[in-house]
Image (cartoon, rainbow, N blue to C red; front, side, top):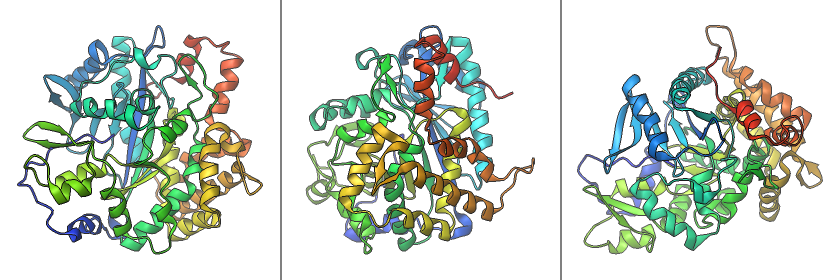
Length: 456
């Protein structure tokens, strides 16, 4: 989840509906200014036991040492370090202590790689000192929900009880899951809607390709992406697929109308957090609350609390993917970049999925959580569509022609993904095979095999 940052400028009150639309329109960028932003979440466990590391005496100490040793500035809330930031990036915490790097805006996947490698070196070096290991999994594998400490951020104090009122799995989402997200730019309303539509269309394929959360509470959970399934009963008013994006006429106004009618979480005034879960943004805008009026900063904050599979803010965010092992993590921004930053490739990806009905999309969305690449739509296995998607992305990356100092093309980051997809397997298939086989269901082997390490 995005870190809330208070706006230090004078508040801009929302006087007209057009201001809400302009929020999206003003973010349009010419193609030469498009960038790639990646957000990497990692679950942390005690190396000796595989149990989740608590915030107190664990993750908070990781943040403290990172701030002491590297160019990070701590963000303190109620006397506790809850995040770090520098001029280009931030390290934030999910509610169960999952550590997230919200990376800089990169012009190539190579830039994202360099940043990711540096981040891994930092957190692993500190983690080793504390007996903490970061795992390349989409979910905490061993600790049940009630054994994971809440990170003491005020927004989570509002969200946690609300989750129990709107679904049965929301607190699991908050405390146990981890994802990797990619942020992409758009040049116009038409381009934004094409990207949002295509993203929603291929969301289930992305979930299937990167499914990586088959273990939770110390055992196999019956899913290949349990993280994906958890979102189906977290808060349906703000998550999942959005039917209106598949209309050819979809616009910024349609997304605005959707966002206006989703219940809020909070507003922040002078460091005071007010619970707004009983109000939609539309109601707050029209009626106010306790003498407060809606501002553009409130609108921005509200948009970060919407969790559809692809999200529109001042950019488009891909949200369908379980967190990955290091050897697959960079395949995520590479795949998204190759598909979404070449017009022909974007059209080709949409062509794969454009003929499906809404009912078929929803059925597939649910099916891939258990079956991943073996799920079917119209008699076609998802693995066949995934292979085509990788080919499309590779074409897009080759066209971009971006090489690093070693002569490596951005398409090279797709290598391990391409290998798995052509085998018809996702990361969870590999985990299950080893968990029931060579690892003999031993936690120590799971931790050792999925741990982040400093690259050689």
